[in-house]
Amino acid sequence: MTADHDRRAAGDPRTPPQVLADIATRRWDLHAIIVRNPATYPRLRQWIASVNPGAMSGAPGASVPGRPVAGAASAGAHAPGAPRPGAPTPRRPSARGSSRTPPYAPRPRTPSGPYVSPPGVVGYPSPPPRSRRGCWFAGCGCVGVVGFVIALVVVLSGLGGAISAAGPGSPTVPSVTLPPASTPTPTPTPTVDPEAVALAEQMTAFAAERDAYYALYSAIDGNPVAALVARPNDFRRLERQAEDPTLTSVDAASLTQQAAEQRQNLQQRIDAAAGRRNNDSGTIAEGLVDAAGNGFIDIRWDAADACELTITDEWRTLGCVNGDDLLTVHLMPGDQFANEWMVQMITVHELAHVYQGADAYRHEDFNGETERLLAAGYFEGSREKMADCYSLTYYDQWSLWYGDTSVGYGYVCGDGERQAIRDWFPGLTAPLPRS
Image (cartoon, rainbow, N blue to C red; front, side, top):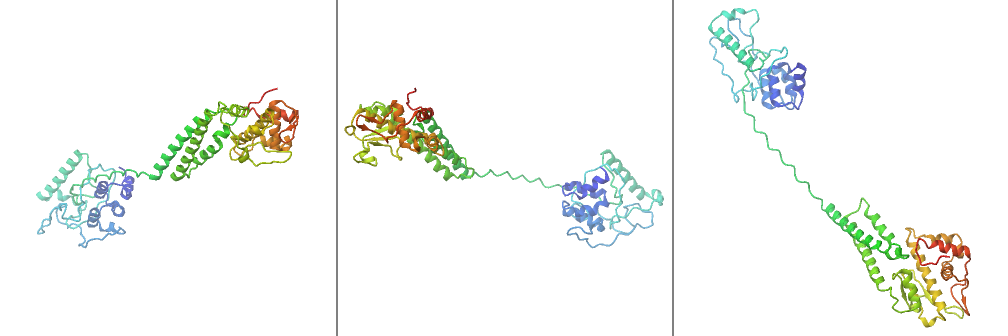
């Protein structure tokens, strides 16, 4: 370990306490840094304060215990550490009894550079001057101490340890048993968010309703009134709302309920259509209506109640399609029609209004091809005259009169508008003859 490494470790709060104790026993020049390290434990600070009071200047919460300043060894022939004549023999400090002893012994390390000798400490005399070599021959006591030091050096060298640079007079650091490491607290199980769980459940239910709806819709795809039957624009609106990142579980529950209602309505229309494909009344009008929508368009002979009636000497209301129910054709009873031709023309005229509604429902803004044609000036911008043109084109007729009876709104369309009618229906797949 280099001196720079010791210095960095002495001031690093991440340095383990044992390493700080090791550095403290061999690097007295780093005591001032060690005592300011927040990782230094109190007993190590107390020990440094006892052996090197000057290092405590600026230490957090440091106080130097009062004691007499140790003087230099006398000029007598006493070996370092030997008791003075007549003085009581100092006892080796124990792990509990001395504030000058770190709480546990440092691990032996191999010295890698010069170290600063510690100042003298009471009970531990400073080393004698280098010029007093007579100590080697002064007596058994001195020889005994020297022999002990040599033996200690040999033992430490054999163990791969280092002789402390603090000098032969530094106090011995006793070993202590470290407390067992505390058992780490287990990480608590994350708390489940009830709102997130409820939202996920509702979104799963919504997805199930969506899949069921589109499965039903695929069975009628291609029908000219499929958009009126399934109302796909309404369902797409629900899907867009379900993609809102701020959606709550309450919002999702409402969307799921609406999706279920749309799926149920579609199922009811499909079931009802299955019973309307056989022309139960056996009339021309019902046969036309059943064929036009494959049973999805209903017919009722209640125009007197459902329609806004116009009765004059020249006109009478014989049928209508109301905006609140675009899948039902309302007609007057059969005896109100002058002839079969009138029944056919009036029924097909009303079917044209059903198709106009289906065209609008194919688009999210409800502006279909019908609106484009009327805005371009076709059929004089009138839905009723467009319906007249549809009847004339359907039956390839050039007049709304049959004998002394007329139908519709008196508008006879030309070739260009009839072709526009033929071009209008491919997207609806309406039953329209081709010429």
